[in-house]
Length: 250
Image (tube, rainbow, N blue to C red):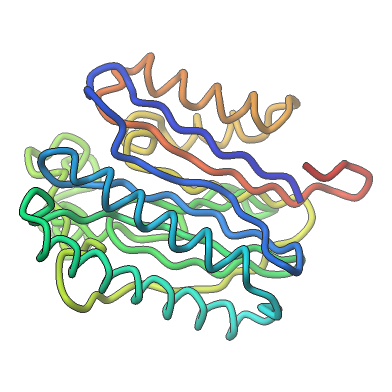
């Protein structure tokens, strides 16, 4: 299994409120995470940073997460725990009032990937069936598209595009979407913040992911492209690749 994490401030924002990483547990399985923080007075990076720190610590100490059911349960329990931590922190620190973060996280093993997400950070899969989005944005605009009130094309330039219907840490309890997909040789999983998905088309994402260069170069190319297209937001991504037999492990 190969993996990479990259983040970039972008060309407009004064600081980076995104966080992410790929972590390995006691059994050698990976947890990939992208969190896009929000909130005034740099509280967004507090929310995303706390989220990442907790999940990293818990994952690196874990073992025995070898079935989809166990993986989904782990994600639900740990993300719910983080939600409570963020909510209490915001209540106890005035400068963090209203802070929150999106999250998309995936546990990957030789056989499956279990994903959890809240907000509009996304997960994509590239496999023998093609390239597809496997998460659904918890946003006002996506709800308008889903209910037929606007088209997908209208959504691209909607003035309320950034309004979220769900975020981690903004309420005492939170609902998350969890699913498990098959993950096998040749498949590539991409998790990213909207700083990438809002700027780079799905066709371009797919074209870069299959380039015959190493994973770090592919990730760097994606970030460069998002910046070339304006870079108005922080840009964060993780890629996990299940190489075909004969390719090395990174």
